[in-house]
Amino acid sequence: MPDTANIVVSIHDSARHLFPNTTKHRKRLGSLILALVAIMLLSGCAVKFAIVRERDFRSEETKESRIKLPLDGNSAKELLAFLKADGVRTNMQATMGDPYGDPVYGSLLHALSDSPNLGARTQKPGKFCQVAVQICVQDRSRHFQGKSAVLDVVDAREAKAVFPFPVAVSDGKFWWIFYHKNEKGTDQFQALLVTKIHTGKVANP
Image (tube, rainbow, N blue to C red):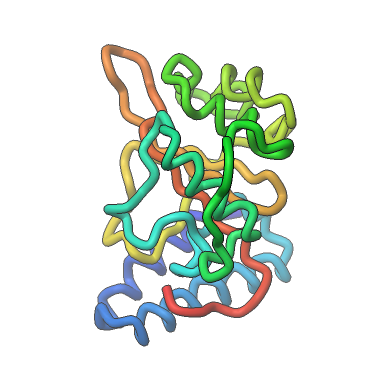
């Protein structure tokens, strides 16, 4: 069976040439990709890729505003506000108090705020906690325990595949997409995009 993620990426790259770079046509492109995913699911294909949602359902408005790692106090507060809004930007409210004290996400945010935790073993990904050992060790809420690392990420904003390939992991509600770079022979997570897992129709990308 063909790699379903590669099929999606190929169609995505081809479709970008058919649709002008406008909000209306990006919406059509997003709908096309999601329709393809639905067809593959119904046909029994094993779909193993993460889809970056439209603007209202992701932690960044633009790629330029992507969350940098390690987190600092401000970015931790902003990310927590997005998570507590159930991944809907229009519902976000300012986070009061210490984000690292949050009972659900506090220990994970703390893990993402410490550079030594951000090393990644991306050569042979399997389970995410084999890729990002220290993040999982420090996260007392065990958001990613037993979850697979996914290297196929579909983002309709990209003109071509991102390299090195980001590492994505699902906690059941969100895709956490980690962007990494090799420095002095060691892969380090350097940026993060969190996007709500799709459950409904597409809005503006």
